[in-house]
Each structure stands twice: as C-alpha cells, then as structure tokens.
Image (cartoon, rainbow, N blue to C red):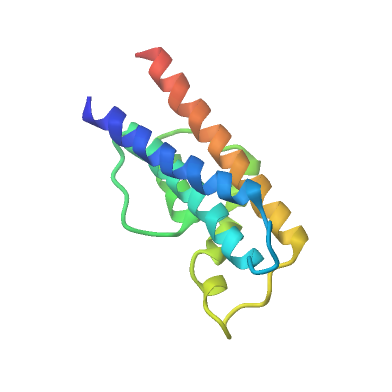
Amino acid sequence: MKNKEIVSDWLKRARSNLERVRVGKCSEEILYEDICFDAQQAAEKSLKALLVKLDKPFPKTHSIGALLKLIEETGIEIPDDVKQSKMLTDYAVDARYPGVYEPVSEDEYKEALKLAEDVFEWTTKMITIDEAQC
C-alpha cells in the first residue's frame, strides 16, 4: 500500500529531526534556534504522517495548530501535551532569521525537545493503534 510507505517516510524524516534535537548543542557553533527548528520539524512531520494515515489532505504549512485542527476534524481527541506543541510553530520561520528573533535559551530548547518527543510518541502510537485495528 502506497500510503503505508508515505507514512513510513514521514516518520523516518520526523525521527531524523528528533534525533538531531536530542543530540543538542554539541558545539558552541550550534544555535538553539536551529535545534528548535528541528524540534518543530519533528512535530510537523509526525503530524503529517498521521494525517496521511488518516487519508486527510493537508496544505503545505509549518503551522502545528493547523495540522492539529485537521486531526481534530477526524474525531480524534488530542492530548493536552500534544496541543501545547503549537508553540513550536514560532521556530519554523521567525527563529531562523537574524534580526527577527530573540535568542533561544537552553530552557526553551529543553521544552521544545519535550514537546517534539510528545508529538512523535503520540502520533506513532496513534498510527500503530490504527494499523492494529485493520
């Protein structure tokens, strides 16, 4: 099934972004803003994997809130910790442009990591549950 391959590809990319976030600031040359962008990307790609699994079309967007809304429209209840991931959207664009963002702190990085992990774990669980019901 083609959808299964696409879901797998989205999750593979999400896992890659998440792993880079977990590695963290292993050099002074690495910016927390860039690591937090990877956190946003991990969450975004995880949610898109679930939407593909649900056969729910989605626009090209970096908005975590918009993706969560599409998932809610399918009748799936989204846990509060996953809903909090909406704040990661700020790292998708503005945080990557000099002069537009405030520097990201270590605590903000840690929060972004936790949110990305929560989204990835929840979406993979939802995808697995759905596959078990088939």
